[in-house]
Image 1 (cartoon, rainbow, N blue to C red):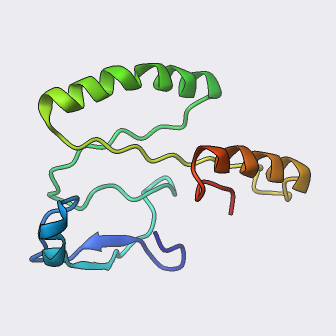
Image 2: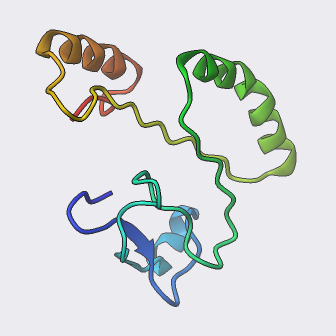
Length: 121
């Protein structure tokens, strides 16, 4: 998602997204009018999109609870044959002072151990 100006949205006449590889050439993207949702987080689905979104600020214990539910969520996904995606955002700092380098380096290293592109920026 672009940080300066907006995110990406489906353009009118686009094929649905996500889709399989053969349908990808029919997907049309545009810069979304607003790059953030009402709370400053990720934008929600386009008006009229047939996507439901659950969005919340979770405490660390609640993230663990979510992790515990993933097998059940994947079972529902499989039975219903429906897409299910997870987006994770980790914020470090209070917005008033720079977080210390030692902590941010340690956190980024841990996150990159999960997925190479999952790091603080």
